[in-house]
Length: 413
Image (cartoon, rainbow, N blue to C red; front, side, top):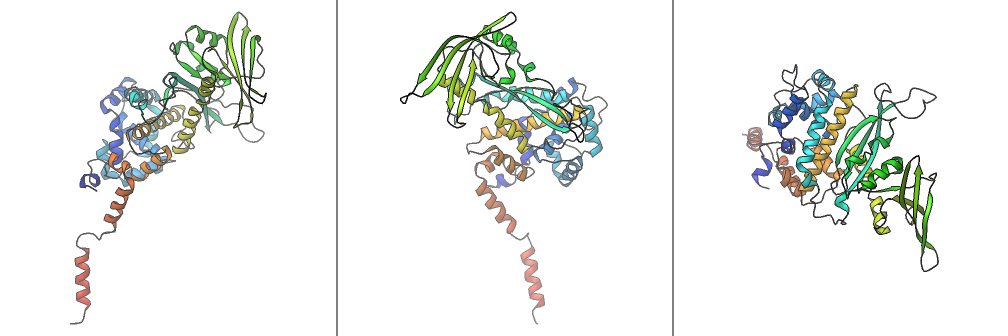
């Protein structure tokens, strides 16, 4: 390994946050009055500290302070002048508006959006770049007084509150392009706003978003939607065609139907097919009458990408414990988690070596404060780790000489 790989000017963490623009970040903080009454713990210091905590998966403010104290000599390479106290970080999470972290995330996404969608290793269908996926996930780890939980109160104890994270992603990017927070009791359908989608975009959603009036608006805007049917929907059948295989078994069924509710009339297509994996018939609803049924099925199956994103975030970042009890602190931690996820996705896309996200996140945690070259190390980690172990096994300079002197002095004269 070259000398520059071992003795790099910044630790891995310092190189990772080079994706961020410090001047922009401080401007965003001032924009939302995040620098008011601040002496030293500015927006940059707050963001860098929270990112460090989230990437390292710390569960408490005490862990954050203790770990940063151990790395105090390296902090100036991160743009930090001192170790933040627990009380300082707690106050900042309560006072600095979560809108600041939202602005950081949205700017980072918009800056590197082309990088996220340009992975040549993926073979994409023609419709992939047009495909949006919408869904939500609920985090329930705090008081019902902060975010109203969903469902009835349990017989024992109190119902936990929950924040619902409503998310939209583009299938070829894999990270949220739009995020909204509500209480867990809020219905998903509020997020389906037809005016936000462009002509010729394709929207994959689950059946919680079914709304005939909004579906008709999407159709008028030239937006294609694909969703799963609810069993209790009522409609008028305009045409019905069944397609059978060689054995006379129905392979798939296509129906043209019309829904009516109040003054709203909406025509759509129902595609029913047999799912080999789940061993049952699945019915999909779409306003597209021209696309092949195989593509409609493939589009709906791509909806699973957003479920994988939620799973990836919850498995690799700390959303079981929160560093503050206020709604503002909870939202800050979720935004920082999304920023950390985006940074690691950018790193993953920049590497030629194929990494699983979990493997990359784990290795980043291990070497986060090491002074090694980020890109060189993650392209050939086995080689670099072997060299580091060899260097670690060598005795410190002067030790061998001291040992020989001791041996000579103990020998008989």
